[in-house]
Image (cartoon, rainbow, N blue to C red; front, side, top):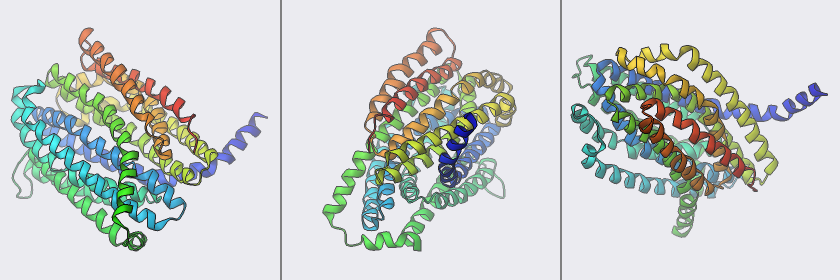
Length: 451
């Protein structure tokens, strides 16, 4: 009887696993490409100097909030486009792509202005004075990358909604090659280029992001696959565009805020780690980079789940929504087990790859147990948060993120890091508590959804 039940379950879920792999693998390759670039940045900058590594960690911790919020806002395009695509409403999908791009540009300009103002208050964050000259130059370069990232993200999510996850993958991989090559010649001054250190890393990132944006826009607007959507929507009225802009905003801003609040906890952890010195800050950066191996993997199949949920939502198939979410959760739990095994047995070797500084290595190794601890909660919450995004029922994400990451996460982080003096080790243990609360609330909310 048990075997028959398992066999029936496998037959029921087999098509969903196949669809998740078809959609998720290109996203995973894309995410691996991003991880490789982050690894290369950390290795090259860390090999150049500990001050440069600490400066990069601080600047990236500030920009990661704006970056993640832009990605979160753009991901609001997936349920809208996905639902229209499943119903074969090409004109409406074209209007949504046009209006969505306009809204994403406006949001990105706002983030650029906000981060530009923060530049004048960098001395107020309590970081080591010796790294501040490096911080200021690198900060301005990263500031210039927000706009091309927003355009690329919007185009990527539009393609994802139409079940095309391969095109963004190739664009990002090409940009990553440029980024890594640029790092090599500009950080260390190879092939006749000047030795620019951390500034060189920033310039290569800026160049790669503009190239990725240009390639994605050209493909989306002029390829045979997508040209029909823009052609059929060329006669759209200002009223139609205005309506879709409001729909994009209504769907996207809760995801943006939820993503930003979650990311704020990790960025606040970077700032708190910096209170204990550059060694704790640099070690936090190294382990954060390694932990992306798990996060990006769960996110990849979470995105695939979101795409399929959006398609089923467009068809008003609630059984399909729950079936694909269950399949996505099982897959992510398996991946969390694999990632945890890698971190347990290979974590110390990975850390040694990123930095030759023995003090940084010693502190970073102590962060591996709490980093492994939160893998399952992270995989769980990423599955359900993406499933909710796919249904467009996104407003509950606001209060869930506030409770989990601000009400629970921040006080727990400060208590463990400062009150009982665990430093960045306490920072990492606090993440598990916040993610467990988020997982429970997201699952409970998901099963109340009706499409």
